[in-house]
Image (cartoon, rainbow, N blue to C red):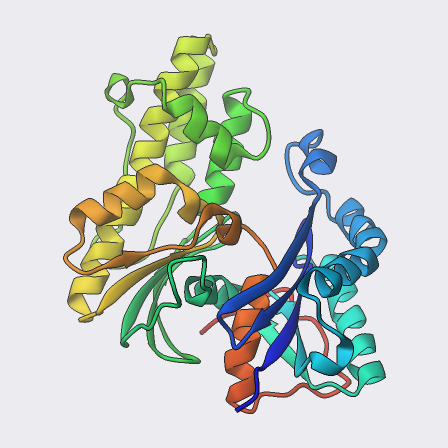
Length: 335
């Protein structure tokens, strides 16, 4: 069988990305134009600015991805694009460009769920050879907008186990980062500050939501806000509180992830999403787990198009095709 090359396009939030991936595993190119500096002044993503920036960046990003991959349009088997969840204006840029390219070049159009794409980042070959997994797999999707535990019983076959009832973990990191006076995005900056801190200095609450696999981080965020109001934010206080907050979040995530893997007989645990780049989370799950734990390198944890192309490959092989009336779904769910 000839090689299947998929062009992936990702514009769900604040990263304009395009990539070419061969056979769902081999990254031929992976171009990401970040908007972090643009949104940092607002302490979060400003939707209208995000969609405008996508419009400006998308064509050169796609051109760069094709050039870096050494791929012609005749070499492509399909175009895969994120259709949701995400910001509606941002999603529309990627979907409309993907439609135009697929229609103009006579290529199949593959719709991709952004959350599922994050999972498939674990299938990409990053230098140590492609991974082959045996199902079922326990997947933790943890990012700025999502915190979900999912049992993956096969390609395209998912069982929802639980998720956040309020803030996603990444959203909580961004909000607490602002409380502590740290730059946006909160996740990596809290992790950096926490490295010099003492997590035992502050006893922060953990919302266990017993007998469920759901999460809640709003109470923890409120506890941090009260401490900041009481004590201000001198540098040593920031490091200690960042460490205590990070440990509280990761303790709950790791404990519930490992418990779910055990209950449902998972052969391995897959971490996905931007927060899965956190070293404390990775270490906490590895320390508790009795099955192998896998996660992508940091560059593939955050939004990128290689994961979209990888996911698109498995959807392509399953016969999934979109019609030309394909629309975005900002509230799209995985299950």
